[in-house]
Amino acid sequence: MRVLWFTNTPSKAGPEFGYNKFGGGWVLALETLVVAEKKHDLGICFFYNGNAYKKVVKDNVTYYGIPFDQENFFSRIVNRHKGNLNDTKSPFIDTILNDFKPDIIHVFGTEHSYGKMLINKFDKVVFHIQGLIAPYSAVFFPNGFSKYAVLRKSSVADIFRGLTFYHRYLTIQKRGQRETEIIRQWKYFTGRTDWDRNYVKLLNPNSTYFHCEELLRADFFAGRWQPLPKPGAGQTIVIGTTINPNIYKGLDLIYKVVKLLKDYNICWKIFGIAGNNPVNVLVKNMLNIKEAYPAMKFYEQVSAPQLIEELKTCHFFVHPSYIDNSPNSVCEAMLLGMPVLSSSVGGVNSLITHKENGFLFNPYDQYELAGLLLHLVNNYETALEAAPKARETALKRHSAADLMTVLNKMYDSIYAG
Image (cartoon, rainbow, N blue to C red):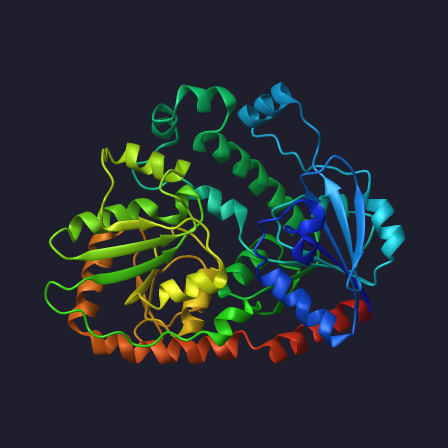
């Protein structure tokens, strides 16, 4: 079967399309699996920061790079102020479809405009739900972070250039509106949580939904967290969090919890953003924090092997986000066999059973999270009992063999329909 993917990344063709620091991700892991199985001819299409349409054939996969809409300096600023999107159209879709001649199209995510560009061009299209932009936009700003307060705390230069989180909010609103139209338009969807299934069925009761898990990076299958000694009185409690630079990911909650635990020796390692990242600068401004918190260590983006080695030094993994579907960071920490604490939001309840293979807390509630951390420090055996169960759950959930079985059945079903 000829399967054409529409993705948000260049996958294994990162270097050929100027993504020299692209570390891959679960789509790349899945590509490796599909190519190795030799059951399908694979093509991958994506937007990229180039000036021209580009086709590359590499290791039996055909990659199609679609350039974003071209903008000059002034139009870029105007579009940011209006929240306009730069992926609304492409004259190359017909070219790609005629060149590859797919039997099935698999769209990863509803973030881009693929679902609108493919209307009346191809009907056997399945959309893999990653995040859900419209629900994300509803909780984009944390409690106390109104959009106007955020704008006032931003620099004049960022306001002029449309680079504030207020302007990002305008863009995500537009993406959310488009996503709603896409979900209502198409028939086939695949996801992995009760939350994304229920949301799709709410917007499109006549849709067909397939449950299909995601594959995680191979490093996390090979890695294994080993239980650390219980931190005694005065000893350091080490916490790990992997976060991306979005304001709704709960960085402000970490600051609030660290403040509540100021009488304890805390080291909170935050992977994925630097200390000078705009989201950290904004959060500190909003919380009136003038100096760095010594307890918080920022690590930027690190490779999978580096991340694993750092997480092995942590007693707990904490996911503080205010909205998420099935965050890979949580799944990877579970796969390592760590004690995982997460806010009970979105699809996380489909990943973690509270007090069995992890621990859930109310979103926004710094008091519950701080209290839960201390409870697990004082009752460390409870955390250690959940850790191997987390790994067992993740190993089963992200089984490559099971995933390929489900994926192939889904493709066959859609093709036959």
